[in-house]
Length: 371
Image (cartoon, rainbow, N blue to C red; front, side, top):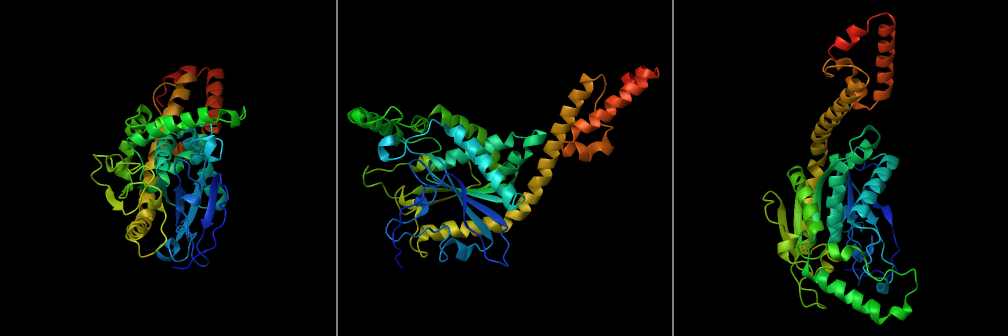
């Protein structure tokens, strides 16, 4: 294996494209990698010794999945200012909202808003993605359907050591960072936050994680999911950071699962294309990419039905508010406008018609007409 000169990793916040197929190949899928606690957008996926990032190295992912655009998403996941970066005030749902906004903007600007999405998530990154998808699912109002599209177009997720039910090491880390902060208090400025808001949420069986899992579980039947767990303990702890029981939640019988012969940090750093962990991951990605287009086509049809239902409900409420009785079953000619969210201009026509009929003594006809 060739060695690369180790370089200091650039801090990336937000979406960054790190690979796009060369012409004439057109990208058909967006693969988005999300790092975990105290990780970084590129460093999490890059080997420490050889500096290989398997997401964009030509001998790794691009060699086997030729039609995918690969992106990383970075966010402030520092757990203590003592480790370098000052922790953010943001909680899991704040990061999730930002991920949806960043990804929706990038896809619209790059002309790939209609392409399928596959997420690669390490540790906390999986929790953020789960929360992001449940949030995007609810964004059905006419002016925010671009956020809803992130949910509609996501077809698969690979969870690398994600603590779906938390980890006992979060409690240990919480106490450690507090102790370190007290011990070095004289070194901190008034602008330093000694610890992150994220750590308490990762404790074993935390209420936050349970709520996120409860909201996400109904979505799993529509996704291809691969749960991956660490098979080697972390040397510093002499234990597993995320035990298998938390990395592979019970009950999801249709999901795939596999162990990776590495510790928690090393399970997302592949330095050899022959490594069994890499081969399992890239084979699954190949299958998921191949079927993603058809899955999105079907999901898009379902989503249009959901959005149409929302528009019908909203129009019905407005019609009742301006004096129309009945429902909206006879608005068949206006369905395209409803789906596209052009409700206001249609209501102007209806309200104009109301005024005309009332002025001509026909208000009872309008009131009694069944809409």
